[in-house]
Length: 596
Image 1: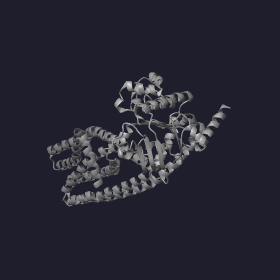
Image 2 (image 1 turned 30 degrees about the horizontal axis):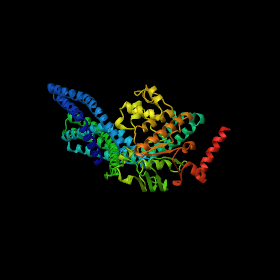
Image 3 (image 1 turned 60 degrees about the horizontal axis):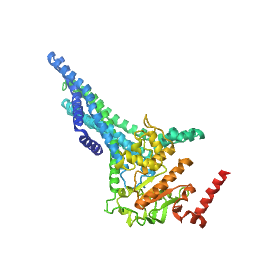
Image 4 (image 1 turned 30 degrees about the vertical axis):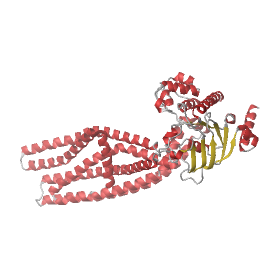
């Protein structure tokens, strides 16, 4: 019960801050409706007693009271719904905003890339969806409690022994709470399974994946995999539901037996002349109502108890995020790179991983240079990029810029001096102005800044065609669908909104481009790299599998199994005959074979 009181109290406190007028109106109407319900039974009993006594006028008065109470019972709840429904929407929106803020509130991404974290966030999304109904359920639960109390008091006027019926009603409440807890535990344990089911559904229906699935004929395969997961989920939840139903049934059975005993007892009192016919009507009516009230209360308690578990989970996540944000040390990020960027003994291991993704990396990226990062898939390139941009923090070692260890600097301050275009770039389906302008929030509404960025990125023609107010993507009726290469161009322009980055990162920037578009991007990149080097001595770092682009870099760094195995110029590494030379020769042979 403490959890229920905690949940209702917390949500009502939030609702009070959001819109106290709606809260007061909704709660007031619900309480008034709860008073009307037992009043109907009392009035009906008095009508019977007055009629049997021949007091017609008294019976008429009580009949009017019964009619008014019944009307209030039917109508007040409806008007209350108009208030608390809107209040529930406001509360849900508040939690949705908080969840977005919390997911994006940590200084680093190493934890958010963990699948277990994704499971946890998925559960939190479901918890937030329950908030709307829980605000309503909490208010209705309070009104039901008032209703039960009044019903018990009226029954006690007939016979104090009837109060035992309310005591017996506690049994289904306790068993219902236990049933809800056990069901929630099973649901949490099945979170990875439900995530897999949703992934397969998205994969089978997403326009982006339909081409490959149609060509491969893989729809039936995906459906079979989904069926296996569904069967696993259904088996676990069926067992949990059976136990849940058994506990709830046991509780209702106890109350049912108590109800029968109460009604039989009142009839016995009436036979002894210790209760009137009206008392019998009141008892039968209110005992029936008490059964309905307790059933409603149990259902509401279950809903609120589930929400309490989710609210605890949400608050724990909120506290965890708060503690994960490192306090500012006051160390400022330098205005120029000076000596460049140094990695000193940097090691990184993902949470719960068995091996290091990067091991003891020592690397110097001189100021004003363009650096190509080369290596096979899984070599650690993406991890190194995220360490340099401050999205990850090293497990061991240091990343140093002009003598400043980035671990001592404000993460947001360093990220403000970096710009990055990742291979899995965000397709921001907003207007072109905001999709590009998002790269530098102070200029998000500046047409001039966006025009400059699109010109530098080589997508001026697309910008002119779409227009700054033109909406990108298919999420809107008037949205413009873009190709993968066009989205990459928009992402590059967004990256270039920051005109003075100390670090510019491009991760496979030409992966979705044709040969001509790739050449335009390479030309734009070289121009931007020269600007960055000249203005702030910035380092430009790019990852690519196309060796023809790699040779344009001032420095080539070769990664293999999380270690730097080679570094130098293109010509020097080819002459050295090492790992890089093998990669160069392999791709050169492939191009030669294609030409033949």
